Length: 159
Image (cartoon, rainbow, N blue to C red):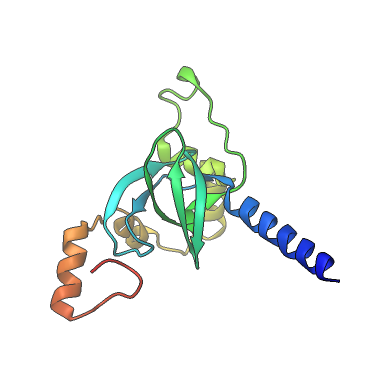
């Protein structure tokens, strides 16, 4: 009985280690690789659509990853990653024809044609406010200042 229980524990540990040591890819246009598992944490670098990463650890919705081909390690929110294989065409097959945004959307099955069809079916929706919001970029220093002035102390990230 002890041997069976010990074997089951070993199998569970091996399965867990294998699950963590998986390779995922970035499924959004770009995402920050952060120092800590928090949206308010410092940014190490930006990683881009299709970039493969190896998962080293998981903490709730965050994954500690190493960018493949580098020694760079940091945290990425799980929503920016996928286990689906993303294949990018090489060379000039995409040159001048497709924007980075279109490429990211196409990787998710969302193309300009799909957007056009959706807009045609939903003509009463106003996208101007959304388009303006997508253009807003907030620097990490601005976020830190906002938190400091507001007396907000985020949990789970650097202060």
